[in-house]
Image 1 (tube, helix red, strand yellow):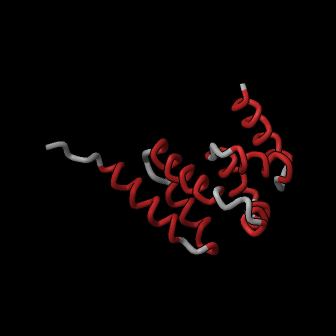
Image 2 (spheres, rainbow, N blue to C red):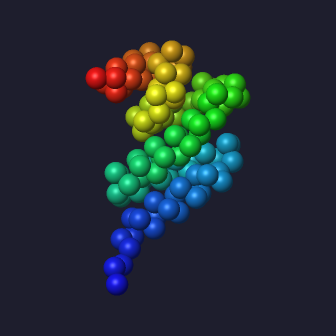
Amino acid sequence: MDVEPPQHARYTDYRRALARVADADEVVLVAEVLADPDRVMAEAAISGHLDDRTITLNAPRATEDLLAATDWLQRKACECSTSPETLAVLAGNGRTKRVRNAASLKLSRRRR
């Protein structure tokens, strides 16, 4: 019988916690997840969470939330997201030049 690696269980736990986290507590939880010693797994959990949130980006409220997020959270969203919609929103309207440039660069690389 195969034993599931511990990082798989942590990934599942993180995804569940991220799906239920209150908006006010999200930044703290994201920081906790990113502090996990398995950086690749942690970033995958955050990326999946951001992609899940992006599904609702067609709603003005979700776009407003992303654009109102802290500089740090926008940078993390840009780094971790694979969603063209999220990256386009950040490229066009990110809070800082750093976020806008990073999102634009990531979008252009996806198009190649």
